[in-house]
Image (cartoon, rainbow, N blue to C red; front, top):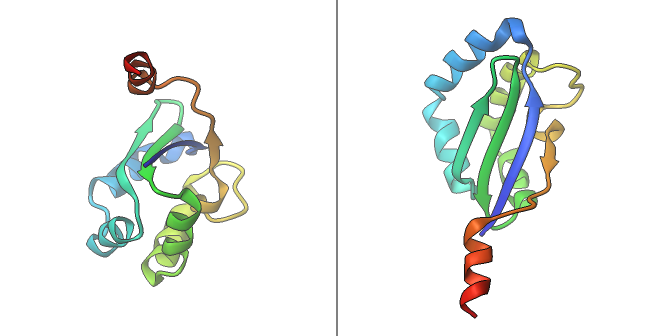
Length: 113
């Protein structure tokens, strides 16, 4: 399982509404994420709007492609696009993927070998 971290920037004046929408994500969107390989998926939001996402998946490309094939994802991305700064593509296509530089369990496992 791969760990993927990404960032986006939420417009500061839209943070409250963005947070409210994520308090009750559409059930069909939740099911689609699970079905297409998004596991242990979390979003973290800083007070200035910096959004950090984390997901575990076999393949982020396959997980994104799977969601792209769902009708609910098209509706969700369209409804969420207005919340982000400087984004001219759907949010799930415009995030900046971060590079993992440390993982405790990986290093502990290498000690045991």
